[in-house]
Amino acid sequence: KLFEGESLMIHPESPSPLLRIPLRPEKDLKIDVHMKILVGTAASSSVFHTFQLNKELPKFCMYQLLNPTAPNYVAPTTSFTFSVKERIQRLIMWAELVFICGNGQIQKFTSGNMLDLKFLCLRDGSNLQILMTQDKGGSITVRTDNVELAGDLIQDIASFMGLDTLEVAADMPHEIEELKQTLDDVERYSSVRTHLTGNIAEAATSVKTVIVRAEDARIQRDMGNMKRMYAALQNENGNLMTEYKKRCNNHQELMNCLKKVNNHIKKASNLRVGAAKTRVVNACRSALKNKQYHQLVQIIQTGQEK
Image 1 (tube, helix red, strand yellow):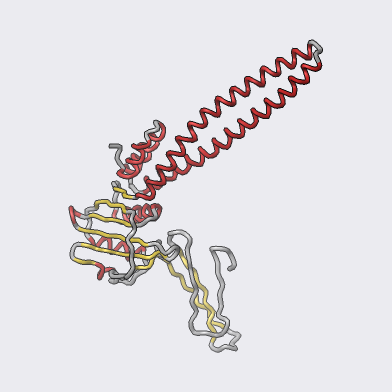
Image 2 (tube, helix red, strand yellow):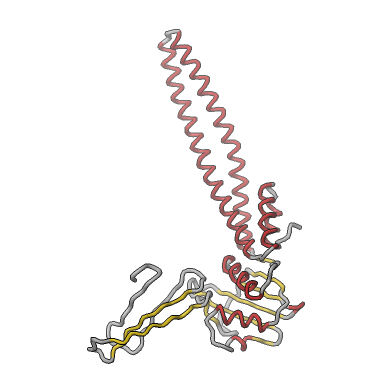
């Protein structure tokens, strides 16, 4: 590897007419591969022909198309459904652009008015399923336990089909359970924060009182009492610092939880397009600000406040 994640040089240990190079993109992005191939006429050749080739890998090249009757295939439990007024052929055209599959290969996955595509993620071995039916003008369901992947797929489909606004109903039990747990943590840390603030105020008051008494003893030249007051001051100051550290740790944990909540909101908004996306973000932030956690969960699932 010449440059990590950018350039790669490879050669066979012994002369070979075939060379396989593994490419594993870390993100789902279109990738331009620029190749320079040196080919010799014999094993001992010192003169090589140079061939330059350019190849574009599609955005979702790390997902392998599976046979419709693939054995041991387990459909993901998380699904995202939305309506589109398009023919199945349009979704086939999109799939042929963003996945690695031969022309006409996806056509055989069509059965009547339904298209059922199953994929295997080559990164982590997870499953992906995309279904489309012509019911009610056209309905697409994306099944994957990766919410970020679902958002990328939905955004790409909407862009290809020219959809300005898209509403999506999400059924994601694992994601919602994680969100509820995070919201419980936010509530708990917020409650503890109020209690710790009171403790700090009380400790600060005690420090002020001891300082006044210590100064009074010093002015009165009561050295014994002054020493006791300054010893007490050191103890009270230690208590104040302890309470402050507790509050700092609690604040950091609260911020981490709020970041997780914001990440959930971001992923939920990416499942929608246009005005629906903006509405979800604003409604989620309003519900979070007003501590309406039940409504926040509902907005993320349905995209609607009620």
